Each structure stands twice: as C-alpha cells, then as structure tokens.
Image 1: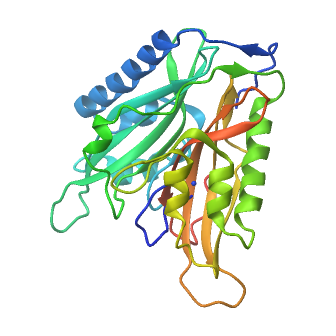
Image 2: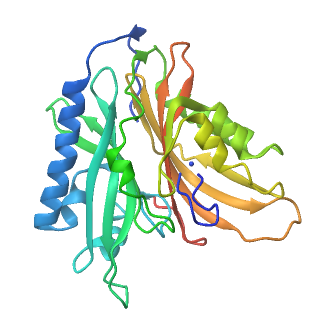
Length: 308
C-alpha cells in the first residue's frame, strides 16, 4: 500500500479448519520445493515465452501488475500478454520463500528485470514481485496470487540479494476460517490507517517483528524501518483500501490478501490522487491474531474496471 509515496516506495482461498497446532518443525524441504518451482517456472518462461507463466495459475488466481486493476488469471490473459509477451522481456529470480506449516501454501518474493517493447528507447527496469502458491494433492505448485511492480521509481538495489534477515515461515496454525480472519484483519488495518494519526502507526501495529516492505532501493525490515517510511507523511493525506474478498487464500497459519488502494487528500485539501493495488502476506501468531510479513504494491490506471 505504500507505493504512491511520491512513486518512490512500493509496499501495502483455502480455509484451514484443523486442530490448533504449534510447531518448531523444519520447513526447509517445503521451502526448497517452492523455490525450485519458482526458479523452474522462470527458466521455462525464458525458453517458451510469457504464456507459460499465465498457464501456471489457478484459473481464479489474482493477477496484479503495473497499470491494470486486479485481474483474474483466466480473464486477464490478453492484458497480461499485451504487456509481457515478446518482444517484451520479463525475467525474475526468487530471493526468499515462506510456507505454511501444513505445506499447502507458500509465497516467494524476488527481483525482476523488464524490457518493454513499448519503450521508444530500450532500457532495463528493475522491479520486485510476490507470488503465492497452493500445492495440490499431486504435489504440484500452482499460482493463486501474484503481484509485480516492474518499473518502480526507486528500483531495488543489489544489497537486497545479499541480505540474511528475512521473515520466517508460519510456526502456528489455529482452527477457524483463516482466510476470512486474514481478510477481516486487513479491513481493520485499512480502517486504522485512514485515521488522523496517519498510516504509519497502523503499518507498525499490524506488522510482525520481522515484517518486510518491498519498496525503495533497500527493502524495509522490521517495525522501526517501516515506521520511518511514514515519518514525513502529510497530515492532509490518507491511504484508503479494502481487501478484495473474491481473492486470497489461507492455510496452515499463512495467508495472503489483495485489494485496490488510493492515496488521497483529506477533505477539501488540494493534492494529487494516486491509485494502486497491493498483495500482503500474513502470518498467524500464537494468540490467533494475524500480522503482515510482506507487502508490495503497484500502480493502476484510474477508470479501468476490475477484472471479474
């Protein structure tokens, strides 16, 4: 949801009804499987073209990329291919993954490069992405949510690839409708962020201690760095958003939500209006509450209708 801060920073299903579980089990095998799936898809897309990526989605998966509203994967193919099919070139590489304790849901994050055929002067743009996956009974990973910002004003730098501190995977899974709980938490997050205190306290309050905002040249890690992003946020502006309840997934203490966001002047205050969308990854706490661990946004063009 942070992306329209002068266009400089880019940030903010499946229900689990099993018995309450807390684990310290090693999830490294699931993480390795997911990272391998993401890397293999990147390589195959390089070989065979952009259609390979869209074919890796569940039909009702959430597809988010620059310039468009949130699209369903099955009905957003033409918009996606218009931007990314040859002669345009989009490449990516995963840097980290988090997974649910039941091994069914996971999310990868990484960096990308994009050469657009629409550029009059060829250039390579560096960006970031989040992809959330569901593993089926056949042990195959399929994409259920993807967000990319392929052309941020401040691209991520190489130091992000050398970092050692990242959000950790789920360690707790409590009974209940986890997808609805995560969506409700996102809606409450939005309500608090629109209050006169501004978005900063809300982003800090709902963040995990190891949360990461994928914006700016260096990804902001932890509540202190995330809060610092908002230290000069204008008092006459606010961020409005709501999670889109058509999308999102949760399982085994991990969830993701998506939605449209608007950065607006308060009341009659003058100023520009910025329009975007977000994908936020959530992790369940031992007390059952949800806290966000990854957030990435991308711009959308106002006036385009959302995909159905």
